[in-house]
Image 1: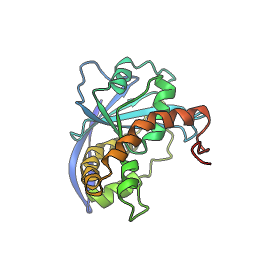
Image 2: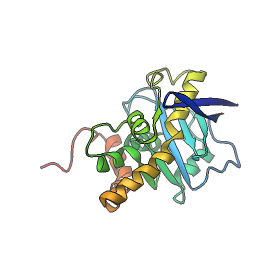
Image 3: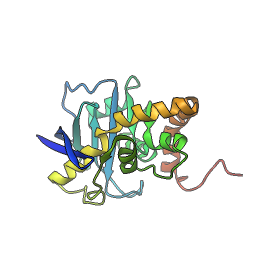
Length: 219
């Protein structure tokens, strides 16, 4: 199932996108390229309590693929293989949470990764605005709606507003990476960012193991 949607930049609709819905896995033969944007929707933000409901992906081409898990069946062999493919860079915003969810439900380590929120905190030290909504507004001039953020993602059927919300969370990550990479180079922090990216799967594993609040590096 596919549908068209529009997004707003500076108060005007600027482009149409295609949102394609999948149930339980990606279709065979789908090629999303070497850099994919990834995000998840869950029943809540507690890793040990709240189940994975949706995983959304984009190749940065203006299209979004929404994979819905209405039942607790996470076999998803094609999606699992893509997320574990070390030749594919996965873009996230706040990768720490998504990587933990992926580890828990797909039993894989998702890498290599890039996190736009982490990079924003490394290079945009002049502000405390690091949410996806903030980055899209500040760097791209795109205003995102977060009205569906707390909707029922565990529903048996996703409504049109939920599909549009899920798509928006991945459609702009490639463009944000391009802008943030310029700032990383300007500030000379690429090596530090890469070290943080490499540690993120371990940080996610610590969260799952019960160290989500405790700083094990503290004195």
